[in-house]
Length: 254
Image (cartoon, rainbow, N blue to C red; front, side, top):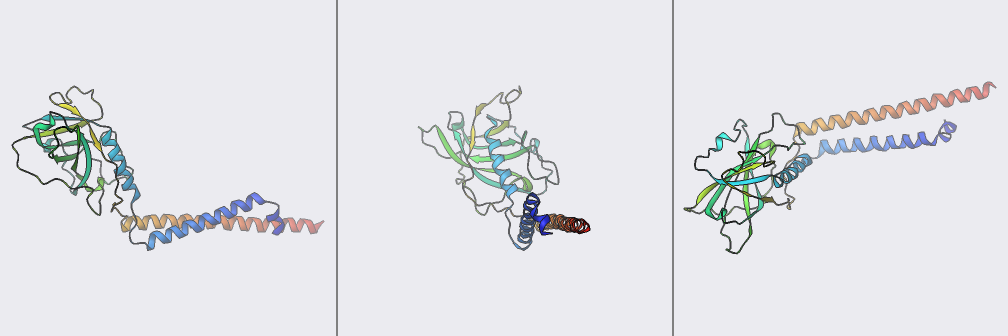
């Protein structure tokens, strides 16, 4: 056996790598099973990608007295939730006319990394109040509320920002619509184009954790993977033992 090992260093390196990988996977499976709260990094990555998607959208503000949110929002999802995030928006003469803004953020060309039990919605709702801004300001920050299905929006241990206290105002309400391009003839025909800049997630306050079912599934997959690697190790050991014995027998038969 020793002569077989000594004459095949690449096989020994491969053997040690398999041993290391098997031990690592087994330890990780043990960690998954015995840790209460494990951050769902896929949900965190989805949220960051969603903010980037929003930043690439074309945004339109328009006055629409007959706007009905139910016509553009899919309300077939049972579990709905809201999240707050900070945006920057240009302070134009057009937006000065309004006190509040409500509308939709399209999810066209955006895909989640986490497969869901149902198809993604076509839009997410967004609404915010216009705060008091200095007359010489060209841009202002505001805390917006985004509403959508619970499975597509993250949870946070604390709000990312706080909305200003709503005040009674005689100003109008604006409707906000978004599109991945401006080629559609009906898009922003009676409004004005603007730009929403969603701020990057600065607080590390994500509160999305793996469920017990997800942890059990990951644990089982990791455990069977480590078992398979152990099986490979046994095959290598048996092969080395048998091969060295055959070499030993041929040597003495001479």
